[in-house]
Image (tube, rainbow, N blue to C red):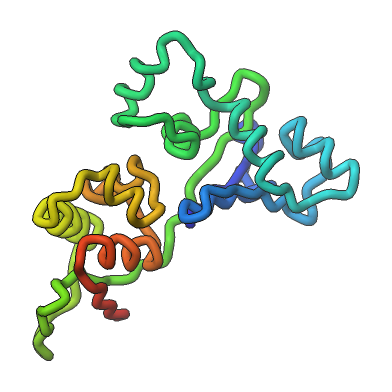
Length: 203
């Protein structure tokens, strides 16, 4: 789950007027508009929805708002754009995040809300962690390579692991390179997919 605050960069304080939530496991997104936000406080599409009394924006309309702020799939130089962002595949959320949601239509930007910090480690199914084992540090950089190592040992490609777990291949690539902030559910699914188990320690 990834959460982004939507705010007007032209205003002082940059108070969020809405939140975009992306559920990577389901491939769905929705927008929740702040109760005190008026139509004039919001991007045009969201303002029109508020005028109709709607503050919870379902996947269909949230996705349309996102699509207005990223390069379309048919763009001629899309390959260059993806390479510049370090992406192998078209990924709406990564493209949105990398540009902070910038659009020529307005001054609204997005800022990702950091997930709560939890230390954890992936261990092989037949490993028994010792009582003296210390929690993993810098887990993003540690856990990704471990998943990649287990995946390769099983002879799986990232795409095969994606098909096995239902997790987007681009997301797996980011996790393995330590550039992602995955949820425990995502890591649990990946660990199971590569024949490992997830040991969680909250400190």
